[in-house]
Amino acid sequence: MKYDSLIKNGSVVFHDEVKKTNLAVKDGIVVEIGDDIDGEADVVWDAEGHYVFPGLIDVHVHFNEPGREDWEGFSTGSSMLAAGGCTTFFDMPLNGVPSTTDLEALQQKGKIGEEKSFVDFGLWGGLVPGNENDLAPLAEKGVVGFKAFMSPSGNKEFAAVDDNTLLNGMKTIAGLRKILALHAEDGAMVQFLQREKERQEKFGPDDYLQSRPIAAEWLAVRKAITFAEQTGCSLHFVHISSAEAVEEIQQAKKRGLDVTLETCPHYLLFDHEHTKKLGAVAKCAPPLRESGDQKKLVDLFLKDQIDFVASDHSPSPWNLKEDETNFFNVWGGISGGQFTLMAMIELAVRYRIPFPKLIHWTSARPAKRFGLDGKKGEIAKGKDADFVIISLKDSFTVEKNSLLQKHKHSLYVNHTFPCKILATFQRGKLVFDNGRIRTSKPIGQWLKL
Ligand SMILES: NC(=O)NC(NC(N)=O)C(=O)[O-]
Ligand SMILES: [Zn+2]
Ligand SMILES: [Zn+2]
Image 1 (tube, rainbow, N blue to C red):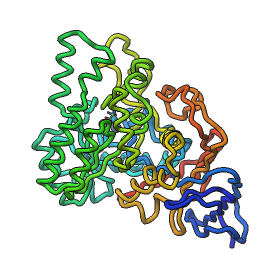
Image 2 (tube, protein in one colour; image 1 turned 30 degrees about the horizontal axis):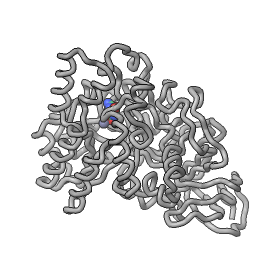
Image 3 (cartoon, rainbow, N blue to C red; image 1 turned 90 degrees about the vertical axis):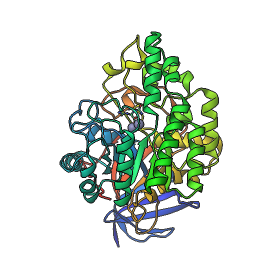
Image 4 (cartoon, rainbow, N blue to C red; image 1 turned 45 degrees about the horizontal axis):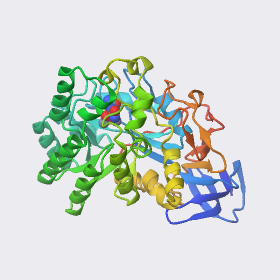
């Protein structure tokens, strides 16, 4: 048999064990796994001494295209993800113009993604006041789910939901058998607290943190769960930052609600001290928490109370991060999409998490939650050959010129990971190695779910 590619001698991370073996790929699919694979291949990669992980599935990035491609874009964004070992991502429906809140906008964005993305992708649709009739066409054309904000999104083009929109939207989305993803911070509370700070003319990082307390996250989670229990809507909470919210969600799960949650590596690795030290690159919503609160979140992560992780890569040009006098005016979003998998490996090394368990957070569960597990989410015969070759013999210190994203600033600059991504294979094709994109043209496919 002639294979397209053959990955030899790697320590392959399966969902239940790490095993040194070989992987053979034909037409983008893993066709053989075994010690003695006979036959030639166009590309042979010797992974001796290195790990082979399933590609990361990042369900939460903002690529801002069309309309704000000067902030990021599918080309730079997907290159950055490939460099970080990500082989599938879902793009959020906001920050581009138009927002992905109707069919025309979805098709426009899908076409751009197909032309420019180096890795496979899905697209979220938006739930905003006034677009209830757009939800069914968006679902029919394959959005991965819908996303709504319970507090202002930071983009005038993407309004937060009011209670009526949320309730009616949940009912419709339940009928469409889709998932509603929520940015859960209570809008009234965070706006009230921000106005109080403005009144007192207090605009520093401490003030910003105090204006978005854990209570605001917990309250939004509590409300959304209550609404979902009335409407039967499946929920996914994005970027959860507190133990209190995790516990509320886990209780709802025990009562039978179909609900999942993600956190982001930055909430597990960094805390408010980093925001004070590093400033704008560490600003996000919800904010990085005080160290005691952050430890409680890490504890629950280690107890497997968090379903999976996502980057929430939310980039911007540097000038939007630049306000020295008012932290509230700085663009909220962490540019960290290149580092999710390495951050997770850092946590695995620090807390002795076995790799077969780690890949549940990075690949298997996101695939299952969004119905991709028939073809992605693990290394297995018959599934897509989406792999990452990782060295644990090398460390990797992030420099500005290691960033493949459009704007070269990130919370992770100067951070050292205890591992290095050597290569990324997308459906059997070498898409990244040695610091560079390797395919001559974009090969990403739009996954319509
Ligand atoms: N408009 C955004 O990209 N917002 C994002 N910003 C963050 N997380 O700071 C988000 O996901 O909420
Ligand atoms: Zn958000
Ligand atoms: Zn986001």
